[in-house]
Image (tube, rainbow, N blue to C red; front, side, top):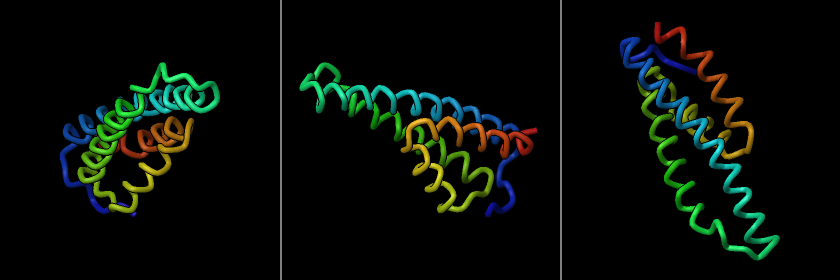
Length: 109
């Protein structure tokens, strides 16, 4: 459940943009991570072994953007944690990004 937004519409709009960009990048990075895992564990190929830490940094940026948006719109810590957990499932990150955008865009006007 959300409480009242604690930021003005411009701040929410900026935070939503950062959330959307990082959500899409993190979602795409998840697919690269899956390719890296298949290469490593199924094909014994370490060509993308460097990707895992990069993906971790991308996900941390997404977590920061989620927290930034969440605090501005009044989400609970549980709601923010749920968004981060959903983003760990391939493809659902894109679905959740659209759902969050539809919910928050009216607050950014």
